[in-house]
Image (cartoon, rainbow, N blue to C red; front, side, top):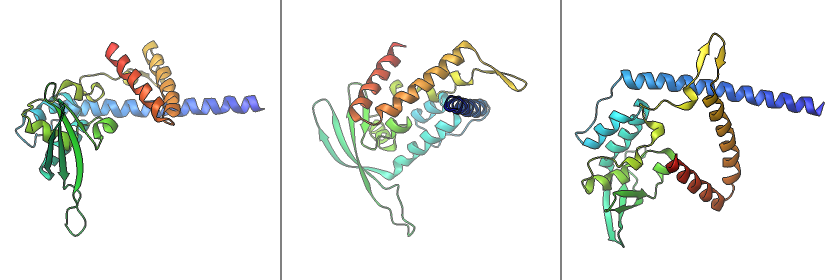
Amino acid sequence: MVFVAYNEEVVRKVRKYENALRNKAEKDMRADAESFSKVKATATTYDMESQIRGVYTLAKFKEFQAEFTGKIYCDIVNFQEGARVLVYVIRDLTLRLEGGKRIPKFFTVSFCETNSEVECSCQLFVFKGIVCRHALTILIRHEVSFLPEKYILRRWRKDVRRAHSKMKVKFDTWVVTPEQLRYRELCLAFSEVADLAAQNNHECEVVKKWIDTKFREL
């Protein structure tokens, strides 16, 4: 009886995963179609905004544009020159209370002039894959016309066909390719690794470095 219950639980999880995968594929296909059929106007004349509009999906471009136009709420209030790195303190007045008063928040942005590498303490790029308004403020200050390629993530590009959407639909069934099966296996494996690594900061950093290395190799 325990074995039967276990099998039923496994089947339930697999079906749940497949339904989620199908929903995600359908949403991505709709988003991709919308990205090619609709064009959102740029809010500025900066080349960087036009650059991202040309490569990112419509939804992600809207996120980027929100950060890009959000630069108007950011001021540089402090500056320090270190070894090969410039460090700025940014005052962000985006947050506003109901009474209209704006509450300042402060962030530290480091910038390397040799390769235009930028990093902000808000960690928006780390968590969401979108360069924040604080980092964009510094890039524009240093006359960086186009966003460096390392900050243009492949998963947000509209010219990339995602692996999980490479399915053929035939009536009520899904015809799954070997590539799709491999993608599913990797997703399940990565999910299990993420659950374990997230419990320990050191292990999390080790896994992230391994992923970065493997990404560059692939």
